[in-house]
Length: 448
Image 1 (cartoon, rainbow, N blue to C red):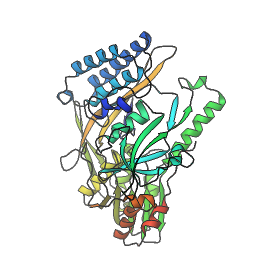
Image 2: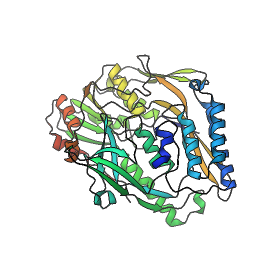
Image 3: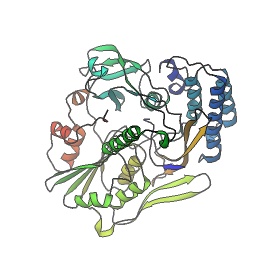
Image 4: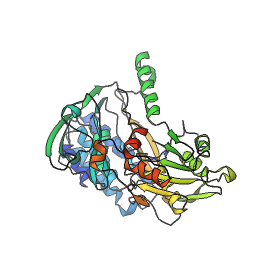
């Protein structure tokens, strides 16, 4: 079991209808014949996942959902389907009935991985392309940052639906091609584009001992690349300002006391949590401790049979006491939202940016396996606690509303400008143009 204080789901065609629209299912990829053996494995997966929810979900009443009836419906649907993809989607859709950001199904890994070559994000109430990878079909088809995404395989991305769309695309049923309806950053030209993903065939990993030396080395390089992308970064602008960018609340490379110790040399600190999915509870506590002299309450953890206070121990005279600005956006989730909301409730600093994700629970991960030759490895993430803030409210499905809403325009995205960071610097008393702000932390793609 693994504890998660983060939101990992970033976790199509007709297949997506089941999750996005509420009864979402019809396979995207070509239907695969489901053998009797695979059908039994799918049913075994269903029972394992359903059992985890019964035993571990923080709300024993399951929000009023008739769980046994829903599980039986899913069992019957799997019994009738001829597609493995559809069976997997049925299990995922079962968990969607709980409408819980941290309760979901991670299916057996597909050795085929897709690189779509473009990134997208909700900014305000619209979805925009934020980055396009060079030398990909996306670039060849003319996709550009600042293009507004109107539909993805017929589905309109909204704040409520985008997380599910990403879950299908990146976890459940990755697609070889996507059909996009786009509007260019000028807002004048609308076009339909079919983008082909770059597909990589990887060996399904069941036992590290079965991997060759070359395969183990490649796996290590991929892990090191993940750490590289998640590393904290900071920039110092004279005595006036330090900017700390945290892509994740990771406990591995983040020494909060050491990093925030550098902030003492400056009058103001910007903590950039845009795109941060959360992470370790201990990192959240360490970061907050470095900003408060006295002990500070983070939230009440409401569990199945208990209630527990989550707090950060104050650093007394060692705390950074200068001006504090925190940046959030629609992809700031879980621990990063807790951090921002505590700062806001305690009036310790100013929150700037876009409304955050609203994905704030605590979850445990339960790994499983079924079958032999091959063995299928999968896991569930099940919310073990709701987190109630100092104002008596949960952030789940609500998020953090900034004190000052600042979002980039399509033209800003197209030209690499960062008006959010520029505005935060202005609040700190530092002049920083949106053009220069956009160059401070260049976007990095995973290595191929």
